[in-house]
Amino acid sequence: MSQLFLSPGVPDPACRLRVVAPQTPPGRVAMWLGALLDTLPTPALTIDRTTAHRNAERMRERCRALGVRLRPHVKTHKTLEGGLLATGGTRRGIAVSTLAEARFFADGGFDDILLAYPVPTARLEECAGLARRLDAFHVLLDRPEALASLRQRPLGHGKRWLVWLKLDCGNGRAGVRPTDPAALELAQAIANDAPEEVTLVGVYAHCGNTYGCSGADTIQAIARTTTNAVLSFVAALRQAGVPCPQASIGSTPSCSHPIPEMSQLTELHPGNYIFYDLQQTQLGSCQPQDVAIRVLTRVIGHYAHRGQLLVDCGWAALSLHGAGAGQGPQGCAAIDGHPELRLVGLTQEHGLLEHAGGQMDFGRFPVGSVLALIPYHACATAAMHPVYYVHEEGKVVALWHPVRGW
Image (cartoon, rainbow, N blue to C red; front, side, top):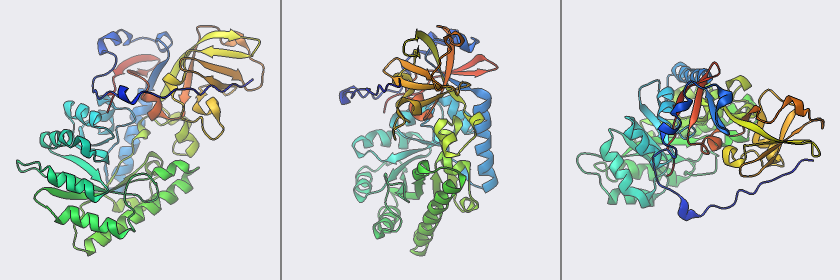
């Protein structure tokens, strides 16, 4: 009796907020510090502190072993606390996806921030403000017109735009292909055309195509291809007389199974690894015990004639990631500790669960009981929540408030 409810609607573009404040004032949830997990208002996003700390330390150790710098991407959690954890408390060297994140982390004392997104020339004044304010605010570009925009907006006061060239080494999103002659020409222009205004810091590539893999071997094959492409491009730059101090690649799958060749890079920039998720376990990036994130949901109804449980978590608290490729709602989450249950329906604020064998034991799941969902994609799910309940030994020990907006 599986039902598929995938009707999130289309948000009005005019409603896209450009804010940095948390949506829920911290004081309104402070009462939950010290609370038991099963008493939290649901749906609730929870983070296992021990697991998240272990994930962060493992990634730092991988980078130490390779002799490269870790520049953690903060777009998964978007919190100061997660940034502190990922940087080992230094508050230095992070990647962000939005200007809202950049301002938020700058306000929180972070520096050496890379906007890992093609520089938004329509918002160049905001970028310039961050560049003047911070010791190091880096931008990406992949087209000559963006470079021209930077040159038309010099920073002054002895400051220069810190620019990374974005390379597309097979991911197929942003970036110039390293084998395209135009890539070398653009890098030369960044480095040479206006050295008093613009500096070429390095090249940056995202191994997003690792998300189409299954298993460490295929992940490492893409990581090797990407690494070699980046290193070959850097060598070509140097041969052309263009210094390129930094070379950075990243994705959680590739950085969870690093290859020796990565030691020739200068930094890695994974992000999802702090939480991991169901997708990462399916890819082979991690083991189930490495997933720190859950969404708690309560049973709010029994429907014996359908053999279904109704829960209070819909797509507004989970996202619809994972529903593709014929998976439907079942692909969006797994039910922790209950492999016999499957998610079969999602509307905005409701979810439907069925027994995989067809015989639901309603007595095991009374109305009011709490279940934990393991989300398919931590980044998308975390974006749905104004607060994360960080727990240890079954109690809430911290509240993390993410930045929102763009």
